[in-house]
Image (cartoon, rainbow, N blue to C red; front, side, top):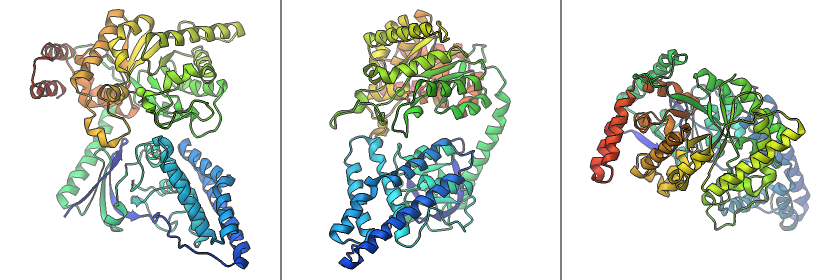
Length: 582
Ligand code: PEP
Ligand code: MG
């Protein structure tokens, strides 16, 4: 009988893998409680030091072997683990336990690991809570040497090509080696949407399902496993029919990818001749190549949070500028929309004094533009760098999380001030650089006309707009069933925003996940959206849909839908929406 396990899928362009299961022994090492006699204490201390040195050395070897094609995030994770291994706070308490309570080296380390893990688990912030895994990896790595030389090299003599790696968790160091061995997919027991395994899987573009409870005890080594990261499901013991279905789906996806290639150079025009701008969302400067390869007309959202991650200090103006110019030059003349810093919910800024009291709700707190206005020292170097980048190509500046007009006026005043400074210093910038605002808070959508009057463009962030309108936390999987982009309230807010732009004569784009989902394209075209920004991998699929759409017809159907929005039963309404979508 088919065995199915569910978790959180991290889907890339190749969402399905089929292959033999390889159970990576990354279960937590069992450590027995043990004390030693007084004469053996010095020896235990030495064992701990030796294991620490060996752990550092092994990780350095892994770090040095990272091929240049590996995403920079992977190296950053390993660097952060190396730093932890250098940090006295990681082992000093274990040394004390050996000296004062005569614990064996491994038991002392295990005791300290448990207290660190507890400390992280008690943290309110989901991102910091997920950093618990890092502590676990690093201490397990040292324990491996204490308990008999287990190294970071996962099963170096095994041939893992094409295997589905099933593990309790996978460390960043494992990830590098496993990728070199051309594994097909990852499935892990631990990890949520912000866990580092999920982050790395996204950047490595391997099908991954994380948070699959007890998966290591369900699957047998060598048996054929299907990983469907779109659905977040892992299957074993599948019959020939299911296997054939997935093989067929993989073939279709490959074929489809190849077939869509001819669209790269084709214009993005609807069947009735209306131009629709298709743009890319960038997470890292390295995504520029994929954006170009998929024929994007520009970048609708360049998220800049990566500049602040995995470090203790803040990026300076030159570092900002270099990251922006890499994209501006890489895209040769197409517009690049740089969004100012959006930190504060699941990621806090190291080096900033802003902290969230434990009981507060960070999604409603000092986030994004609110944080930037509170900490101008954090914000000014970024503003200066974005302005300076505008002297090198078409750059647009995008402000996240706006909720009020006074807030917007403060940002505009600050941009004005920074521009005057640059002028004074003789530094070049484009004084007409377009400035836009994200509409991702319901208040901003309801008041979009006022924002549109002051801004050059609007961009709808549906990820947050849905979270805030429906009161459904984006990172809480217990309420994800309530996440509904087709909720009439969401459609109404999108429509209001598009109309506000039209009335004021400014462009409105959408850069939330909804814009790159084929399911919503017809409805969004019918609502009047003409600029879609999405993960570069989705561009060609959306272009194909746009080119086969009759926008005038979709607009009529959508008008009709809105004319009866308030007097239809939910079931009828859902069917009417579905008719436009399909
Ligand atoms: C959004 O909220 O839709 C958006 C694009 O911003 P982010 O996902 O970075 O919050
Ligand atoms: Mg957002």
